[in-house]
Each structure stands twice: as C-alpha cells, then as structure tokens.
Length: 196
Image (cartoon, rainbow, N blue to C red; front, side, top):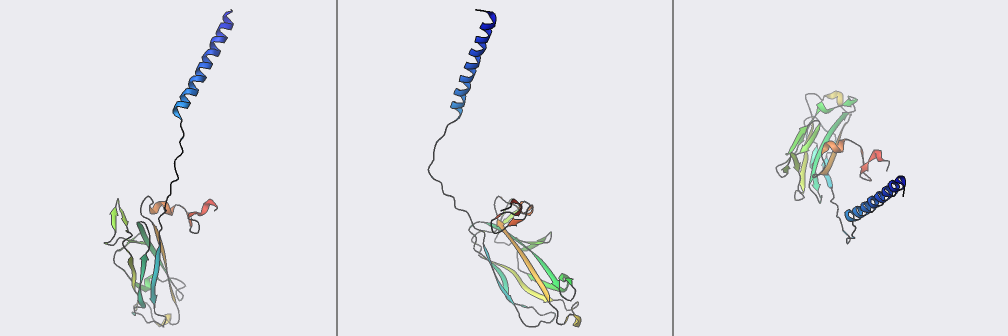
C-alpha cells in the first residue's frame, strides 16, 4: 500500500472517529423531557378614580372640590403610582398653573414634574415606594382654588381646565425610566412602535 493511500485512509479514519465522538458528545450533552402543564396567573394593576367639583360659577379663594378626589386601589400586585398636572386658562390662552392653588393629599412628593405616591403606607424597597395590595384608598386632591391675588374681573366667564395624567405600574421588576423609553399601547400593553 502506497504512502498516499495510507495517509488518505488514516485521514478518513480520523474524521470518522471525530464525527462519532462529536455525535456521542452531542448526545451526551442534550436531553429532552416533557413536563406537565404549568399555569401562570398574571397580576393586575387597577385603580378607580372618584371625586367631584362644584358645577356652579366659582369665585377666587373658594374651594371647588365638593368630594375629595381619591384613587381606589384594586390591584392584585404591588404597584407604584405617579401623576402630573396640566392647567390651562381660556382667558390666558395657555398655561394657567400659576393662577390655581391645589391642595394635594398627604404622601405625594413632587419630583421632575410628577407627583409620586410615597405615603406612610408604602413599603420602601431599593429606592422604590411600593403600594401593597392592602392599601385600598389614596387621597389625591382635596382642594382647588383660584388665586384671588391673580384672578380678577378680567377672567369673568372664562374657564380653567385641569388635566391629571395618572400612571401606575407594577412595583417589581420595572422602573419608570424603562416605561418612559417607549410609548405604550394601553389596549394591548405592548410598545406602540411594535405595530400591534
């Protein structure tokens, strides 16, 4: 047998052994098993809004809140809560926030344009103020008054519009910065940019 044939046979034998060893290693490293069904129950973040203001004409200095504005927590998981306020004036044709005095409920802290709920009934965990499911009622606004030193007769017959935007999220595993990265389609719960 020639030297070239011997090298060719030896090479083929080496490749065959290598392929067999690779198959044995792959077979040794992989395994499959079927488990029984696993059920997951998702938590629910849910708050209900209540409260009322006077529907009559108001005068500066009068508290127009007839029933304090509150949120009822019906969430099944720990949550975090924040809101921002926008006040517009028909007379000023824009921002009217300097002309309205608000009395915010206890436990709210203003930071970066948002009021964050950090009441004594929250649980602090790694810098987060988590609202347990046992907290059922959170007071938001108890007073809304026009500032009499700024609102005069010129404002007569015009309106102020107060818009509150509430944001609630699960308390664990998500932070506000993550949620702020993308717009959320709240009918699906998915980022709006995903096209669904």
